[in-house]
Length: 173
Picture 1 (cartoon, helix red, strand yellow):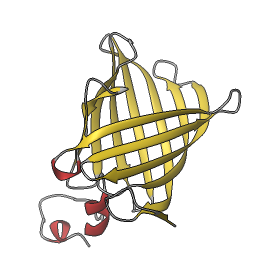
Picture 2 (cartoon, one colour):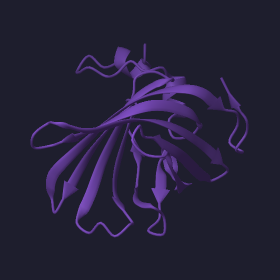
Picture 3 (spheres, rainbow, N blue to C red):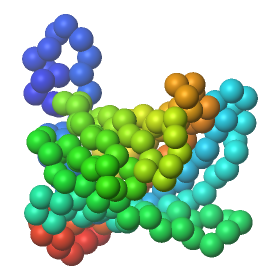
Picture 4 (cartoon, rainbow, N blue to C red):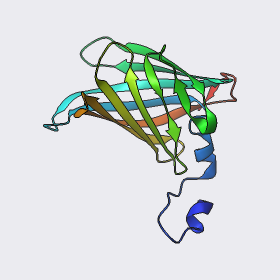
């Protein structure tokens, strides 16, 4: 049990092992998953596809290479790069594909408000990542256009390999 949960009679705190908490945002790996894009007004499923994300830390830099695996069109790969911030946070400059700063909570979530740098004026995203274990996580994106929620993206992922060290080392299953 998480020591902070044992010592806190006031309220529930998640019971995520300390080693899992320590790795969030610090240790890369390979995640495979499924995306579901949902219309926020009608709750209709707009699109569903699979993905493969390889993330790695090299010194003070973080890189994510995501391959979006569509059934109706060729795969698309995007590379995201960030500077490492304190406590496992990632800082995506205005020169990157997305711009924003992620923050890790003490209970195993990552909160990441950002904007895309592709000219989508008025579009903001709030991504919340929830680590269930060291190898299972969910992500929910709330997409806003002109301050109005228009789309939700639900992602379920499993980590199938882990990065050794913080030097961009090998992935180990």
